[in-house]
Length: 168
Length: 221
Image (cartoon, rainbow over all chains, first blue to last red):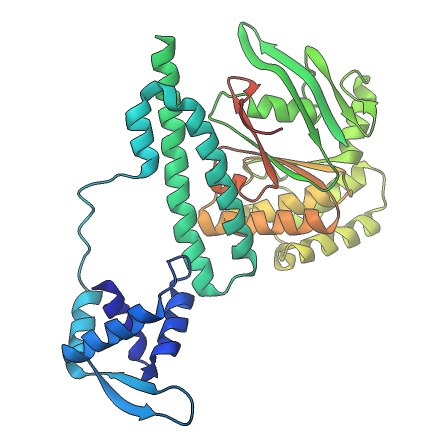
């Protein structure tokens, strides 16, 4: 229930309505998939049902209804617990990139060279974004860059192993 | 602006470069990448007129440079090229400002003028506070920024940087890259960057990937 925890975290500062939570989520977690409005409201309703958040005000001045949510004491405790929980290292690691190489074996070298170019092109975009980005965007870009870099280094190693195999 | 055509070079039995061709435009930022032993530094040294290729040619602004007599080549390197090494390679007996002024003194500018221009470059790279300190008192990142200032002080056409962030941590390396690129873009200086680090290569406009002394197939030149 990570989205729920993130929304609880954003409510610590002060009560907020759904639209504001969506905006802040997308800004702070730049690089993650933007949150859909439907998901924001569904998550808030679940938090309310579980006693982790509560409605403190409902405004309706001609426009659409705007509900203001606040974090509860139980919500604070749950957030604290989540923030201090160590995430287990992933027991399975896979990706479409790895799956192609697993299937194609040593014939995947041409694909890997093209994939390498695509990753590096994305790294160029992220590096340029960092130059003018707000601190939240820089952190998110660092995270994305270092994951792409890990893929690139694996691609290098895989290409070297394929070459070794093809020369043997 | 800078062009290599069919470069080849061997060291003894070892083939370091095979038929490497490339073109670098004015103000362009190009990364030469590849694992160790791929020929990156040999290519850089051939382009910079430090090593003479056995075959092929190196052309700067329409003029073939790899066949120039040594004295002319030295003069050209001093006036048209700036070099940044992995460990800065500053002169430890001199202050940061004197190090930056050095290439201008070699090019027979007066000391006062050289020191004035050096101070401007140190300011541009945000290391003015290091001007009067000897290089041993500087951090790795400060030293590299001083080395970048020294490479830019003569207004070169091309800066060659060989693993300029290789000895720095992520954030220190980022500061040096931002300083190098900001300064180069501001003065339309081309940068040829040798690196095995993808995150450094991502600062460049494009990549020339080397494998076993040749340009990797499938990557645009």
